[in-house]
Length: 365
Ligand SMILES: Cc1cc2nc3c(=O)[nH]c(=O)nc-3n(C[C@H](O)[C@H](O)[C@H](O)COP(=O)(O)O)c2cc1C
Image (cartoon, rainbow, N blue to C red; front, side, top):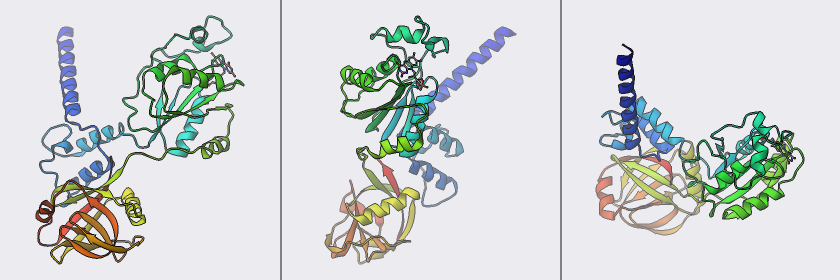
């Protein structure tokens, strides 16, 4: 009987593993919030979001699009950076973690906690004991304690805040393990630490000497009792690099999704801000055999000039109407965006001769 149960369990594990593999294999692993919203709207019966044939939305490849796919998509979403900043920290007794929490709260940065594969027990950090693990490690610069799990990738991050306690005047060796297993050569790194009284400078020197870092900023030591205001003052004094990733606009029309590059205008920025909150579905009327035009639910800042509009241009007309060109026309408009990777003929065919409904959403690349 026991043998039978063991075989049954093994079979169940195999099936689960196989299913898990299928889910992974089907996932495109960079789902955006818009994908989740699109699937949700489809499930709520919005005809503008017909997913027929869109295999990428069927994450568990069971031939249907349902709540399971949304759940799986949300899991994938967690692997996508939500910010261009990541707070990486190691904290054995919670002091450094409190500072990290405050940085995350203030900046909206993502979080990665460095955990030792073999966790540090209380006895391991009893520094009064010469032979405790922490002391032995700090006495040997070559020790590299194993990290339980490294971050999947730092690709989407421009800024890494790196936090640790001071152990015998230096960064714990596990920080060195982390540093040697990531590529920071194009990142801005901002160290911070907590300690009883020691400063951060020796650890800063160690970090600089250990690995190439794009821009290593001056770090900051905090007391465990540092207030939120202390931390905020430090953050405010820092000039942080702006997000390098370019946000594009996704436009769904007649079952096809196009992307558009926003123009460098106030109106385009204001439109992106609106779309960041929720997608916009708009009915566009045919006009003049060269454009589709529809009224926006709000006005956008005008900076009109005479523009020879080309197919693919998305322009603001009279401050509160959006036009998408599949032909040409010269008039006074404000630029909003430009469709990419589509020809005039393809546009004309896609938009057709009548009115159309389009859905605009943000797509952070
Ligand atoms: C092994 C060990 C060595 C330490 N060495 C120092 C030190 O050299 N200077 C200092 O000011 N504090 C030292 N401390 C105190 C810690 O830096 C301090 O308690 C820190 O806030 C702990 O951070 P955590 O709670 O994030 O782990 C040491 C603590 C330990 C466990």
